[in-house]
Length: 532
Image 1 (cartoon, rainbow, N blue to C red):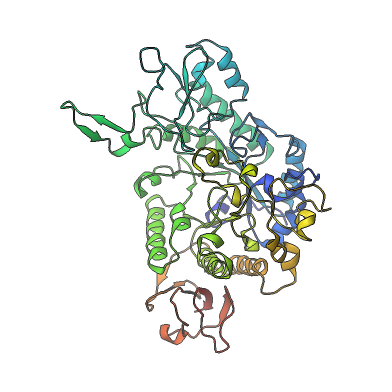
Image 2 (tube, helix red, strand yellow; image 1 turned 135 degrees about the vertical axis):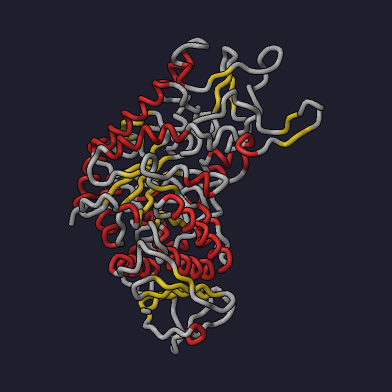
């Protein structure tokens, strides 16, 4: 099996996100690597995915888990080499799996040679013009240039010894690049071509809404009008560093580059914006192919919440003639097993939400380990947490980045390294012994085999993938819709058992997210696919 020349493959693809540091360790140093990914490609083929999205594997000090890039054209030695990347890509393509890589264009690492050159250069130099250096306010420039705050907490400016300040919307180790500088734009066009020439199938654009800042870098808090009254800044002025119109000029430069390569090379935006209309502007024939739909991930486990977001998302997709994306977990948010209640309740709901998601039109993004039913690890020792946000705000993303359990026992690191060598960089909970891929392999009712069955049916059934959602009348607490041809989806979120006769449905069950009653009734927090 090899990847097919289908330029529209991304429209209904199932994409599996790999956080490389936590996926699989081939050399026993406790850190996942590209050879570890390569060794698990048959597992991913059997799971039934269409593509892999690799979180950053570039040269990085890991001040923010790899999203602080020191060299955009090389692999960090902790993860391997460019030769390892090429071998992994070749093997993935041979198995019919495409590869999407993360691109981090809003900021670099402070260890990037450009930033080191900027620190060594004088204010106003060409080296400093690649970043957002500014003079401070106050009598001696002792105050930052404005009141912007870092996403990770604290102010978004750091002062250097000569008195200037540089902007970092995230950690101080992540200085923001100056996208008004033609040299920066040219550099990233070349970075795109570098990875496209190696054969990657697409890019996930990190902070896609953030590269361009409002002219003059206005403050965002409260200001005074001419009468001295305090007024709240509204509209796009509230966040003059996000979703500025100028970002679209960048993507209009990038799209012809993607289109020049065969096989449907694509890009998906991580863009947090205030409205469907603003999000729609990122997508189209002259910009990006997709944008992440985070609303579904943030929905309550509630039929009204799910339906409102599904309708809204599909309407947004219609605005631009592109399919929406669906996601339940990723490297930045609590795993959905835990968000939905944790334990048996959370897993039951997570499986039901997964069956709902995989029945919707568009593409689906899975996060590594969700097919095992992994929960968020909440009790990590503080001294082992590495998320820069935790150090500033107490909020941590480390719990969804704990290395995956592949087999064996906790003392073996759950075979994060196949030989049980090394100590995983974050500790895995003992209760994961029942959730390892090895433990679930032969259990027909396991979450792993549930995912395999769902993805196989999604690929086999013409009704799933593209198309439309036709809602059916359903009692309170129940979602029901038809996908043509021949599939009905029912999700019982009511606090009672549901008889399909209440919906006038008599089809055969294709797949259920959990055990049904012997008479076919659907328990609470359970979803089913039926023949229509």
